[in-house]
Length: 287
Image (tube, rainbow, N blue to C red; front, side):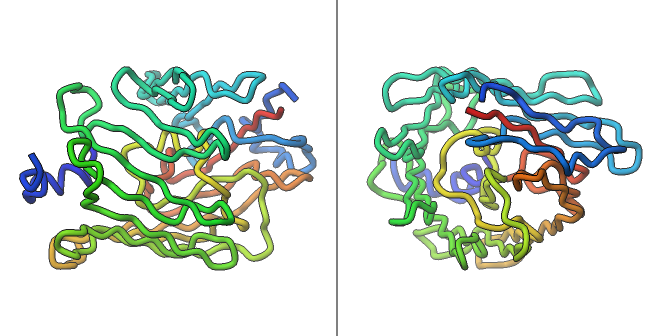
């Protein structure tokens, strides 16, 4: 169940309202692949992660993208247990992308950006509490805030996430419960000034429940520079710090045309990034 919504409901808020080619760099530990050219108009289609010492695969998140640039399925594979731990085959109907029979994204037909999510607090239980997330973008196309509301009261948000950008990079995030003013989470990020990747990761540190979709749908412009570090802090009521997750990103290997081929994610796992702290490698699908 989504931790954020579980927290709010547990604290009583719920009672307030009744080139069609795939390029991959797996198994390139002896050849960093930095001479590789990915191509034009490419986007991420796979995130694979490996043990940094043994180079044994932990797993991968893979999106199948067709010739129309439409994501037809997303699969999360656990290489250790040899099991599929996530699968979604999105179905498209006008401005609606059904990720399962009960949850869906709404897309702005003009900009192609996600504008709303209809979700369940427990995706395995169709009778669990329904909620909406509304996505707001700046005039220049960056995601600047998200508002959460119960589906029964969509006009009364109970939680907001605000994003702050510096030089077209997301540098701060803060999630606030609106009825009490308490901070639920915040984060700070830094970036490499000299690495300007194409079609790299979305960095939305608050994301927990839908990170498997985030990298493959359109949530506005991506950061201008490559992520260097992130610290995400979670709080108990009264703005009491409960825990934090600290990660750094080192050893970037880039293609000749500035796509990230691999990077080391050190330190803590980040729920918003669908991989464990390890060596990450990336594959791309080109139009």
